[in-house]
Image 1 (tube, rainbow, N blue to C red):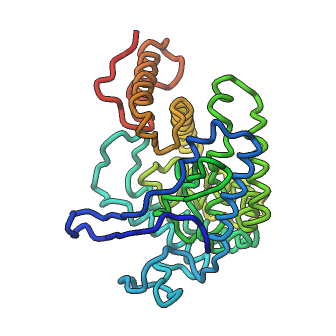
Image 2: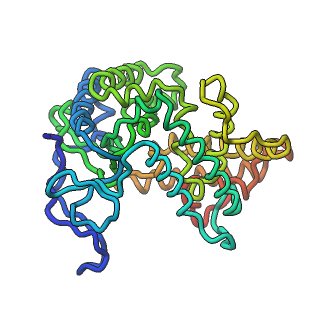
Image 3: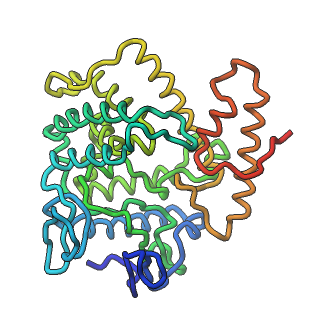
Length: 384
């Protein structure tokens, strides 16, 4: 395999080493980050670059694995691992899709604290531990039915894939940006069913920031890049291409079930509600294990889900404004400018909710702060 990755010079996974922290030391990545070159690239160069990126991903996704899990050295102390070679193994490993589904739910349950622990911090929704556990129990039954569905099974090949395939993690030749010179940030990569990557949208196929701010209804360059990306998936990574054609209501329950305590329970509950509503139409076997909510419970959930969607809207508006991914990363060279813009944006939002007419919407100052996707700017004052 010839995927360009900087050479690892030294590493340690023990916080008790001489420097007191886990670390990886690698060679400096060759070339320049794609996000620096992208604005000056024409459409032809961008399409060639996408083909080069996906050609590399084809090599990674083509590696055959006997189970789902993560790559470890064979000497790892793990009760459930499966050797791959004299040096590597998959562990912890799940040998089939049913076991993988149980693993997702078990992970969600393992993140729940004792029932008497009170959550603190900026939380839009704070449900008791017992509510999470009960919903995850229903979720387990639902996922086990989905795991037996022939459509999902066809898109469940165990593949290794890059989980953060964005321009900041891709380096290209300064002279010819269609040539990929290095790909970094592999630490979160793992061996998962292909359908788990179906909703991953790399930023090199999204409309440009200029197109968004100018109000263009169509970004032709982005559409061509999207078409090139889809064509590469169909040609190079068939299981991933197949999974992107599936009805997404079949796949969404897999995405949030293990993150209810971290990200809130509302998204997972909504996924189950949408699935049970379409259970018969999706030709899933009766009965559906998740019961319909009572009218009163459904009304409460719908109000929470409306706030959840509002929070997602705030996130994407901030991402567009700062031209940043969902984790808030910005280049160090642009930190001062974008941070000032970020503080101004929060201050203006704060002013808007403080001066809105009563009854305009459900947003108030406390809700805004809970919805705000990143750290609340320190000392932020209302803008007159």
